[in-house]
Image (cartoon, rainbow, N blue to C red; front, side, top):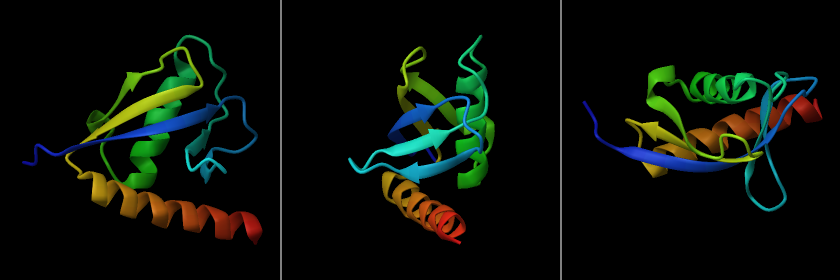
Length: 101
């Protein structure tokens, strides 16, 4: 059982045509979700998407700050900051390759 925890600042785009992650020019990760920002549905989808693409259980991913903002801070339990960055780079590279086709 690991007590490691990492956090990540993200920018959320709601009502997107496709769910996914992308690197913004400022270096922040953008999380696009199709859910509207109503009754916490977009927040739930952001956390689920991040858990899925990073191979973590949903219970290890939590919203720390930004419940009603497009800028959010998400925490990940059981993963180091270095491992989170490594996995994110892999996911973002794969997403970019799919987009560039």
